[in-house]
Image 1 (cartoon, rainbow, N blue to C red):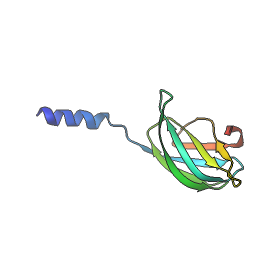
Image 2: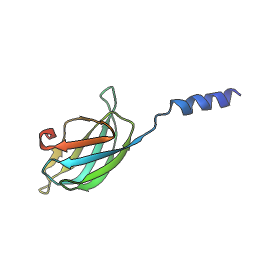
Image 3: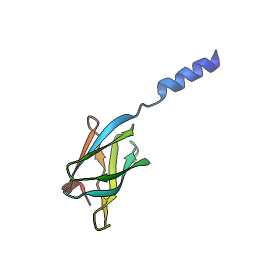
Length: 100
């Protein structure tokens, strides 16, 4: 009985990851792209590799974190990184002004 109760508590506390769409409106194609996830306490919670994301295209990732940022390379192999962006309504759009 105690084991069953413990299992129910753990299941009810588990966070559900949601599908998040990340759209590239930065004016730069992204290559070798990684989407990094940030928790409420400003700590990294891992990443997902999504490959190439062309201008105007999107990729989908799964996370339960409230924020993310992208790390990628441009067509010359130069590093691209965005500022942290809040995930609103399961969508994030990266504009040129969001890049370092």
